[in-house]
Image (cartoon, rainbow, N blue to C red; front, side):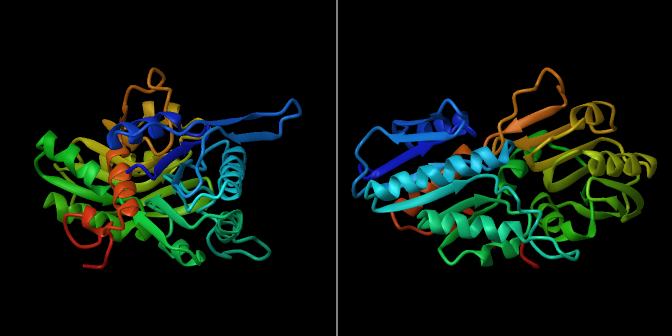
Amino acid sequence: MDKLTIFTGNANVKLAQDICKYLKVQLGDALVSRFSEGEIRVKINENVRGKDVFVIQPTCPPSNDNLVELLIMIDALKRASSARITAVIPYYGYARQDRKDQPRVPITAKLVANLLTSAGSDRILTVDLHAGQIQGFFDIPMDHLFAINVFVEYFTKLKLKDIVVVSPDVGGIKMARAYAKRLSAQLAIVDKRRISPEQTEAMNILGEVNNHNCIIVDDLIATGSSMVEAAQALKKAGAKEIYAAVVHGVLSGNALKLIEKSNLRELLITDTIPFTRKKECPRIKVLSVASLLGEAIKRIHKEESVSCLFDEAKPYDSA
């Protein structure tokens, strides 16, 4: 492990520290600050020649700053003769712009992939992409991890009975089916109509939720309107306790106020994005993916299989 070096930008220092603690290594010494006019300043303060370097930096809000920090750090490490650079991106920003669903719109997820490759990344490590096809945007190796085990472990300890795993839309059926299989639970779907990119209106519940404990699963929560609408629809349909398990807690706009007033008993998110507003919303609980990412980093460094991290087959397959 003497060739392994881990650096981080300013996006999620706590997660990087937790990963280093898991791996029992020191966090790399790097200066990531700003010049007086606001431009990003990076300086690697230790020798990385011939090292296997991992840069931990989610591209969460402020997305542009964090993305450029990551790109500049990769460039600095490349010019410092690192043997291999792996960009560890727990949350891959711009992932919702993954296709042309309207005239004259960009495919920004592909643009970001090009930028990361051009900057000098040799490999990408990420968690729960918003769209699986983003893996095809890269011409370099990508390891795609899933946080399903983190949530399943939590709900197993709760020992809930009569569980129904709920997909908040038709597109999330594969994810919901994977959770239902692992929790030995039933499956339901919220049939909703999207009013705008930020707002939805829940319509019908496909599946039996009456007198059941419901767990809504999704990959990210932004404004929270979709989640709140789904919880309200489930409550009207006779659901008992309603939980939500969401990997990436973006929580923009007035999401916290919506969640506090919602029918959710608890919203579970991971620390792929830092959450520091616990006092504003005590219903939100943060679970860590540090051990998941740490184990993946160790396996990549030792050239071992990363797929072995999963107890069963690929979590979100069609089985």
